[in-house]
Image (cartoon, rainbow, N blue to C red):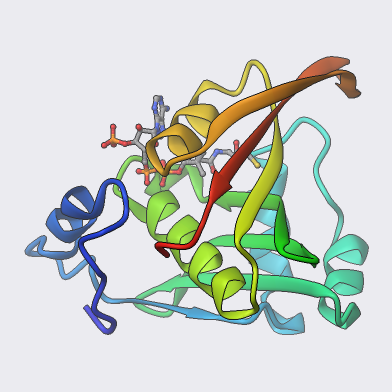
Length: 174
Ligand SMILES: CC(C)(COP(=O)(O)OP(=O)(O)OC[C@H]1O[C@@H](n2cnc3c(N)ncnc32)[C@H](O)[C@@H]1OP(=O)(O)O)[C@@H](O)C(=O)NCCC(=O)NCCS
C-alpha cells in the first residue's frame, strides 16, 4: 500500500485485508479531482444516483475554492470520488461513490477515511451529511465509520421524493 493507515478508525482491519490481496489491489492513491477526470467521475455518478450531478456540476466544484474533492485511483484507474465543503469546524460531505464493479472491497471506507483525514487537516472537528433513507449501503458505510443519525429532513430529495437521514460524526481520530 502506498500509504500507511492507522489502526484507529472503524474497519481498519478489513481495509488492511483488502490491501493484502494477491492481485495487488492495495495499489491505490488519491488526488484532488481534476478536469481530465470528470469523464469517468460522471460515468460512475450516473450509475450511482437517481439524480446524478452533471459534468458542469463537477467542473464548478473543481473551480470552487471552498470545495474539497478527491479522486481515488486503483492502479491509475479511477474507481471513486468524494466531494465536501468546510463549514467552520464542521465538514459537510456532499457526495461519495465507488464504481459499481469495485464495491464491497473496502474502497468506499478507504475513500471516506481519506476525505475525513483531509477535513481534519483543514481544521474540522465534525462531519455531517445527508443520505437517502433507502440507501442502505451508504447508511451502513457511514455507520461503520462512526456516523450516527441525528435527524431526518422530510422530502429532502426529489426523483423520487424521499426523506434524508442526517448523519454526524466526530472526526478527531482521523
Ligand atoms: C456506498 C458505497 C460508497 C460503498 O462503497 P464500497 O466500496 O462498496 O464500501 P466498502 O466495501 O468500503 O464497505 C464498507 C462497509 O459499508 C457497508 N456496506 C457497503 N456496501 C453495502 C451493502 N451493499 N449492503 C450493506 N452494507 C454495505 C458494510 O458495512 C461494509 O463493511 P463490510 O464489507 O465489512 O461489511 C457504494 O455502494 C456506492 O458508491 N454507492 C452508490 C453511491 C452512494 O450511495 N454513496 C453514498 C451516499 S452519498
